[in-house]
Image (cartoon, rainbow, N blue to C red; front, side):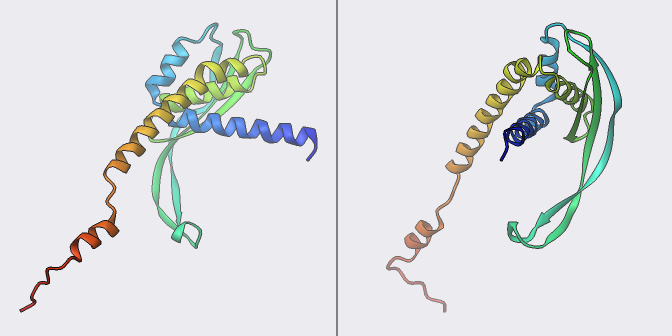
Length: 169
């Protein structure tokens, strides 16, 4: 793999990670980050935010044949940011599950800021990494709570297979 291709792959992975974090954040968290943003640029929405439906597909057994599971509401937005210390005008797009236009709009703004080389590190440090850390903490708590309620069916079967036999009469 050439150096340019490796850099492109790294850039794509970073943008995908950021898109996932922004989509998983709450509107209040994104608004808090935006309100604290130094030297905010001018924002113009090129598209939306607008709501629509997407068809959600599943797979039998996780890797088998696809089937249509149902529809989900999504909001998409495309934002152009300029000024505010940006080197150039930058465009960002977001797709967010649900029907909150503010969530999609703010996610698109931060995606646009990520496209500016001078703002990328600031967005990663002040927005993406803190949000990702909060999401990881919440996910860890949810996993711990789920593990605490797990039933070991082998243990239950062994406990119930002991010496007393029931009559079926």
